[in-house]
Length: 537
Image (cartoon, rainbow, N blue to C red; front, side):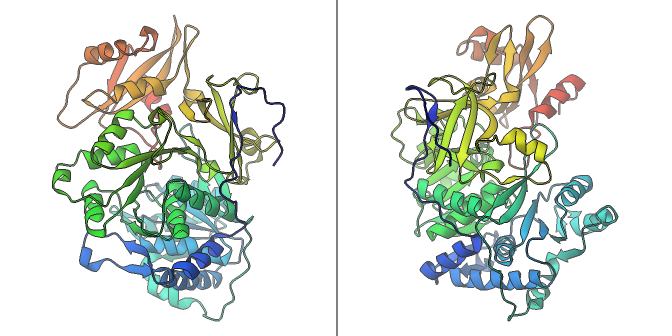
């Protein structure tokens, strides 16, 4: 990694901390090492609602099943080919992830909520040779959707239905030798969230994913005693990377529910003695708002880590009032995904308004959006990162890759933020979302944090719209909590008491729910279109 030299004192740059090593391993290597260490401990639990019917696998059993998957895949594909998975969370998803890694295949992850055209785009752009598909998801026939798209997908030659799982496993030859897989090989193609438009396929290597999962888990103090309740979608780096590979490499057990439901989550914490959960803020809000939470025995739950969206300080306070510690992370798909994180007992006096320091082996700098120069401490600019976790590239998209990663290897995240003198990062929002009103910069995150402290507000998003007099002005989109009502005037006065007047939205829109990406990020470009169309849901 090139050295950053001639950095003046007081600059917004934080060097890589070597506290944790970067291992030159594949995901399959990580699985084998974990099995060698924790052979008979529970590694995976099927988090269905019926406690008596939950399936469980030890590390040894998980390795055995994953090797069966690898051999079955190698009967159909050649190492290096791209194979998609289109399914909701289930234990077989984990085995396919690990099996594809052992087979040297590149797994293309697809959101099960996609419709036909979205599916076809991902399969065509990734040049997937095959797809493993869940037959039905939320009353939609996914297998039928694949068949309907096949005429437009000349590269697709194999469709494997999860309903034939036993036959699929048996099809692999036990004597088939598994290939040697290198750390630098591409393990997955993960499609970016698409908050600003068409998603791009980030190629993530084994080295990227295995190390990021392990370093995240060590940063939050996870170990063999932990039981991870994982509601994050497996088709995203948080679910299949941070949680799955984090628990795997620190000896924890992962409980994988079939989907997010706050009551099921509470039951799993209670019945399985869950200790850790990674989730987005909306998930935690709904758990804490559950009418049944007061009757639950949740003494085992010690930590929730939050990411994927702005974290309202009020939400942190609510969780801590329940006896649950909170830590906050920041990253993006292109970084496998995490770059920074706070600690469960963070010493920073104002850690709750930050996303923590760079994780070990990651450099962070804040640069001017105009000149690219590193800014002084405390000034807001674009967050850039460099280290082991940065993607290889965007698949078959060199122009987008050049825009994202510069010649020195720095990932330009597109996020605006600042660093303080202790290396803690604060995020102010997306570069493209900054609002310039009459020459004054307005950062949506600041206004959103204020709105989240209002007792009636469940969700908030600020977007900028053109204005003849001011250039741009902020518009506030608000989702209220069930049973609550709030007037526009009240919201304006609430903000005016806490913010400079030029930051207060003059226009308010109320929504039943927000348009979101697969990773629960609000799609502000959709809100902007809805505003102009005057068709707010």
